[in-house]
Image 1 (tube, helix red, strand yellow):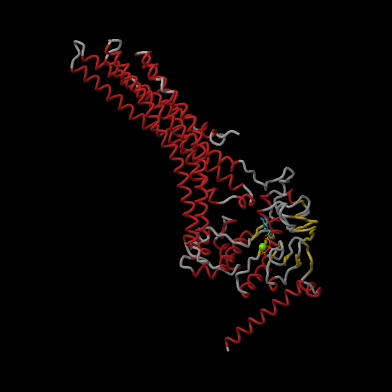
Image 2 (tube, rainbow, N blue to C red):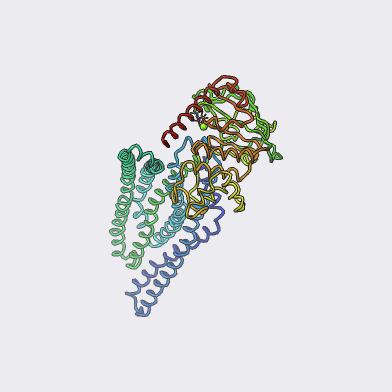
Length: 589
Ligand code: ATP
Ligand code: MG
């Protein structure tokens, strides 16, 4: 697998900028190599006749000019190379997020949000560092090493050979320690993901944590994983810490050799003092890339470990996609839905949710689904909207197999109000127009009136501009549900599904919303799931699910006559209502 497949296109895209940066770097490197030559000239000049103070000024001035030139160019290579690394970072981040958006609901059942966040923060950071500094040091290593070696050889070949004797030790260290760094860095990133995942979960579940007085135990969990993170980092630091000092030791060895043998060569007059000093300077330039190799290895190991983790996510294929057989000409759905002998389970290990279930609803009618909790009501909806894939040839919409309809058409025509409502930390208005951004204010007002939430909204000091969620007001469960209903009504879909969407509103409000629904959706398909039977009586058809089968099917009246689960439920609920209403009237007395 190509580890770099995600960044190469972006690097190619920015190659002109990177190349320019690299060109500047090469110039800097070459120019910096002139400085020792000038020093050599000046030092040897001191002993020559005719060498004046003016010559010294020239030499000093030249050194300063070169330094100034290097400073300017250094600024620009940073701009071109490190700046580009940020652009690459952004592009990969964007692609990562787009990819996450394309993945199916099931993927998110398998992976933790904390992990995904950690990849977006820590790993992308490591990739950016690799892209930016990888190039820079790469260039330095090639240019500086080659050029300084050239100048060293031009001064004295024997001395050069002696100076580089200890250097193969460096390569051995790099290979051995590099592998360990790669492994340990992978561990560091993993524990970071676990830790941030824990923090994320504790914070989003703060209400439950407080309700069950679990602050201490949550803290303990987080401090355990924070400790783990420290431990893994320390184990990385132990290896990294060995890198630099060992390099310096090896370099010291080289210095010692040059000092002794270079000194002797100067004494015997093989080389001049100026050459001796220049040689030292070149050795310094020669070893800097050697030190940098250590750093680059480090960056490379971190960067590739991170890229591998990111690639794993990039390699996840969305499970729910348009089939080849999809008919793109289907844009509107009338809303006739047929289930034909559908048998379904979520996966091999779990039990059957539906066993050979068939039912239908004509376009423009209202279907109600009743059944015990966990019997599969929401699953029906997830299959109709293809949050999960149903078996082939089992669901038909407008007499077309569901796989013939594009996901876009399906989701545009079928709007569902899910059981667990999610509102973004944005204004109420933005939350409502989610599915229809170009709504007029009148339309929004009308939708909220139909959903019986208008009065609640205008009671907030900022009305429709009120921010909900973490940064704003906390809405009640019933308010959230009604805002979600308004959001769905605004899109006026051909098929509307309410999955227990009225569970948190009182009976009277529920009744008013239902009246509006009946009026607004007279010609359109509506599917209602509810535990309260009183809210289902007007449906054209009611199905009762039990033990993976449809056990009863008919209108409210027919089902009451049937004397089964439905009637039983209905009578129980009526009794409950009666008891609670007499309790209320007792209290009033
Ligand atoms: P409720 O009235 O409580 O909302 P429901 O009738 O909507 O219940 P479903 O949510 O459809 O029930 O779930 C039916 C069964 O499928 C349950 O046993 C549930 O545990 C299981 N189930 C739901 N979603 C998944 C999933 N993604 N993977 C595996 N099993 C699942
Ligand atoms: Mg449900």
